[in-house]
Image (cartoon, rainbow, N blue to C red; front, side, top):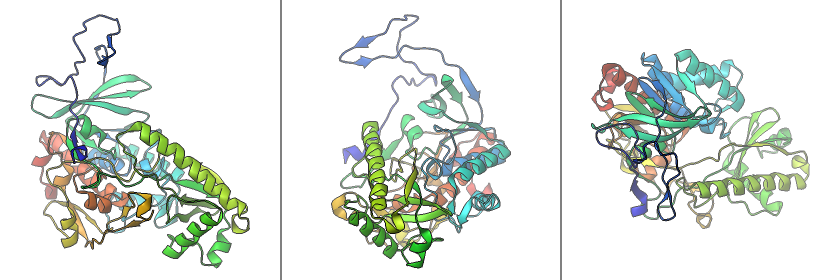
Length: 454
């Protein structure tokens, strides 16, 4: 579909220069405006915040790993994050659960060990989001990464050789420009790559619909011991299908029609429980109005669920909402075209690559695209084997000097539904950071670096 494949080309990019040109306005300070054409922003000279070797945009699971790996290669590295902490869906998203991390060495294993040492983990896969923030801060700073929080990337500019050279950001410091030899897009939604003019896909190949979003929450007052003794919730461990069905039936008993039919509860700390009980269908990450509406609706549903459960009394009599996530959980955004595209056929045959950066053990996990599809999740009949993600899927096809890591790498709809989880994001980020750092130090393009050499 035409809406599934789009290209964003930044207005004002001149083939002969990497600097932005917003119009021939000279020193005229008047506001140029046309009702038909909209607002034309006056041109201005921007301060260069940093000229460095590698810039990583997005401080989530993929971004922190990319930045640490790049800095450890000896490359001067800056990590830019739009929120006030690192961790992305792990922290501002309150996911509190790491999926498909067990077979990941390197930074993923190091992070898990650091979480254990800081008493951040309730059990192997579950962690305390506040201690996760602090742990990631320390790991990045110890590696020599320059971290810039509260800063959002707003534009990307290429030079005459089609290589990404500058980005601009907005922050408390105003608008600034940044220059680097290599950039890594770890924004999750492929924001940087889209701004640079890369082609991308989004949504199901036939309908264009994307997986639903979910808003995580933390609860207190759940009588975990009683639920555990009744086989209705584990104090330690991820919920089983029967435990999810029990929670859904309780939500229904409270008179609510839940948007997600497989809601989950799992302990994060003694007395603190994480809940995912919401689906927002038909929301495009390309539309801020839709995402805003979805977030407000999701927060209302979470509050109604908690209040409804409390009204039942018994094990729910003291349940209270501690917090909803600062950002809604996005399962699917742009899939940037890379030098290789991972397909469902790769999953089915368990593809291995000479430049494989990590092995994926997680199966296809497509949450219902519409409530009428059942409101749950499934694998669409695809039986996947452990497979590798090749480095080529992390290197942008349409723009040089740009890599991706995390769920915005190059893959089809069904492959993305497998590799999108955070354990894989960390491994991808580490590989991207290693290659980007090496490329910057050797003044090469990422595709010219032999990954096995790194």
